[in-house]
Image 1 (cartoon, rainbow, N blue to C red):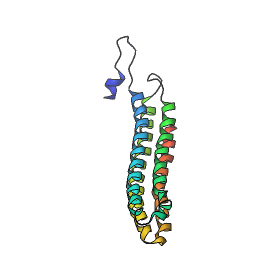
Image 2: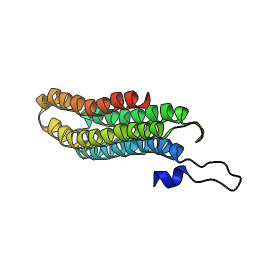
Image 3: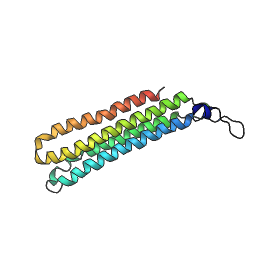
Image 4: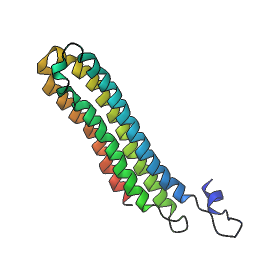
Length: 165
């Protein structure tokens, strides 16, 4: 497939290269998948907050922490997408190695954010419901959320390293 794309020429005999396609797919995957994780985390944790708000409205503000942490995942994806989009160049000067590296970078960030978003959403939902019944669960909830957010941070770091190649 790459050989076919690499040897194609347009009507005016300029070569057509698909390397930029892979770079822009990295941009897309970083942003879309990170926002998917952020959206799921916000949705799931928000459902738990809505449920506890009925009988304990005084702890709603304290329970918003999982929603904020889920929102940070979208910021990670935006950072990687902006950095990658600035590195994608004309197909004539942009190599396949760079395209594949940038696609891997976007997938690394995006998939890590999906995993973190699922963890934050589920822990946030169950955690705020449990915290409404037992206040001593709050510190444990925060620690688990921090470790879930660290999954996305690891993906961001590796993504930034991949984007440099």
